[in-house]
Image 1 (cartoon, rainbow, N blue to C red):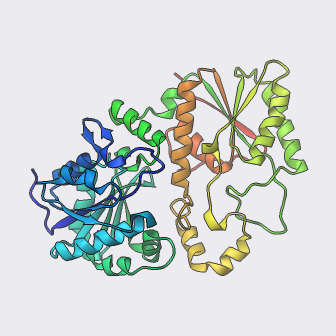
Image 2 (image 1 turned 180 degrees about the vertical axis):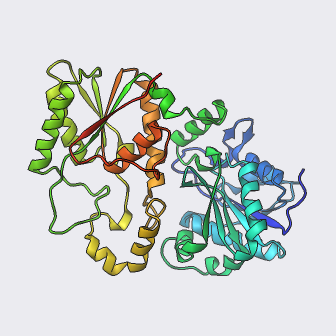
Image 3 (image 1 turned 45 degrees about the vertical axis):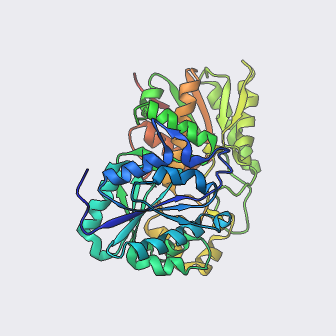
Length: 412
């Protein structure tokens, strides 16, 4: 067992939810040889943290035997049906009262059981070096934020009294400059088991030794065609166009037809076109399919993970309106366009990269065709091409004009 960190830190585990999307009680699901809850507890203690609060709610009686004799403080959240933020507030309030000497607290949802002691060690080291700066700390894997969040004691009062929008994110957004993103090499900090699909992914990830194949390895010897949708119907003024759904314009359909005829000359060897499920991509894919199926049957496979970035409440709004109504946020976006996102449910470009790369990895493993055709958006094309070439979404990229395509060939 490691020595207790100095200054001392605590941890808050959230296990009050009803597991409704999962369909099974998440804290007791097996992750490797342990239940999710015990796995998290053991990793916290391995990182040298003994001050632990567990927030319970739904099925509380099933969890109490697991923590008996482990020195863990239990807090029952009777408002567990009202959402996770109520558990956050109840737990942090208890942490501040019970562990008066702790300078900060890790926040760990029970449905993120692959957080490792190494990830926590990295955050602890950062806190020990710069704790006086009172920063929130969060691990990021290839730019995407994961768990746990380290919350300095100084913010607990404000969090527990917060009645505004956005829950905990409403607080952290107020202190955007104090949210420090700490790079880690462990993808496990991103994975959750909120759904059966997420749980299967966690089990597969563990069985694979906690590693993923690089896209370039899976694509070796094949041709990947990145096809950007055609021009869309125009609005009176420029808008934020993420997942806001608009159809192709006449020019866009002509662009798609031109690309289709060019692709016909590539002697395409596949019977599938993988397309974002947004209209501008599906229309483009259908035009290409009509040309290519002269030689063979061609199926369009809708892939939600290839959608453009989710811009949240800004999606579809005029850029001038956003600049006028949200000047500070618009300025922040300009300073860090890859990491910025507005509100719960929105994305940044690292989020887009993660879901798009994961989808292409799955396609390459399941589809043995020599050629892979993808009808996608600019942000997705950037993420995929850069990853295929051993780079990342925030690295330099030669843009792909609307209605055009690019072939990526990876040598064996």
